[in-house]
Amino acid sequence: MSAPSLDALALGLAAAAQPACIARMLRAAPGLWPTLPLADSLEAAGLHGPGAVAHWRAEAGRMAARAATLGYGLIWPDHDLYPPLLGSLVDPPLLLWTRGDVATLHAPIVAIVGSRRATASGREVAGQLAADLAAAGVVVASGFAQGIDAAAHRGALTRGRSVAVLGCGLDQSYPRDHAPLADHLARQGVLISEFAPGTPPLAHHFPLRNRVLAGLASGVVVVQAALRSGSLITARLALEQGRDVMAVPGDVRTGAHAGAHALIRDGARLVETAADVLDQLGWDRGVAVATSGADQTHASGARDDRSDEPATFGRGPDGASLRALLAREGGATLDELISETGRNSSDLLGELLDLELAGLLARDAAGRFLPPERKW
Image 1: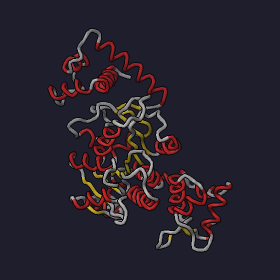
Image 2: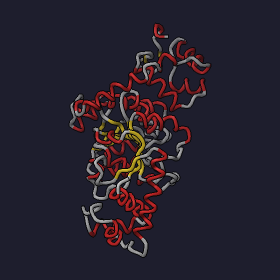
Image 3: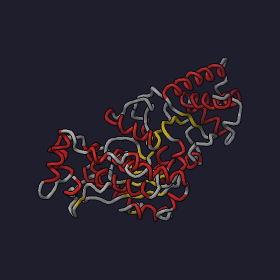
Image 4: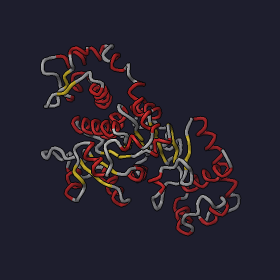
């Protein structure tokens, strides 16, 4: 790592340890960091004690070595690959750890957020919306949580790319059953965090994560959220940052969608399809793909990389029981499949979406899954 990069990392680590001090420095010298020498930056932040420069440079050296060992990248506001929309914030994160293709952060991005305890239909809507946006060349960002977040990531990865913003270090397995999803994202998108490797997922990290998630995207879509859902924090932050906020309406008979409905009452755009989202953002349906030939190749190639997946579906005992359930008269709903197979709901939804998008599975007007017999 070059000396300027090492100093940028050093200041980022100091910011994580003493955020109030660094914020004071940024207010005193807006726009100067990280062009100031490290010693001047630390002094402006009030961190100019004996050995401060040597201490933070040594810490940066150790962290850079660890990142290299783990295969992570590091970017900061002056870095060429720093997300442009995030860099436009008044107080952008001073350091981001990355795993995967950082160039993903320069494509058109829409965030999809919602409840961790989403219903099967909510996850289905999020997954389909994400898949359709990805097919248009939009990168779908979310917070890597259970429920709507996971469904959005998985849906996007069936047709294109996705960004996951974490509330912990990139090396932390949280949620525990998302390790395969993280690996998929690293191959076909990027995971980012402003928290150093080794940082556990703590409650106060997630509002900070939501700020980054809102700042990355041109717009935020809330798919399913109760009145106290954390996704409403992301929506509020998006409004404060001048982003478009959209919401998908849902069943009024439960409180599961009350937060999304409140957003719509307060002026959020009601959306039901990817076309609605693109219209709200003023994007033509093909313009996102056309922004970069490389992006288009990546998105279309994503399906080719997994072209053998449907052929392997149902080869094990779990798959055999799933095939039997789907083949019975009238098919099966997602809730029935989850109940009768005992499968993880998020993983099962991702597999079903893959099959549907590959033409190996159909759904009727009631949302029941019905496989075309000629495909089995």
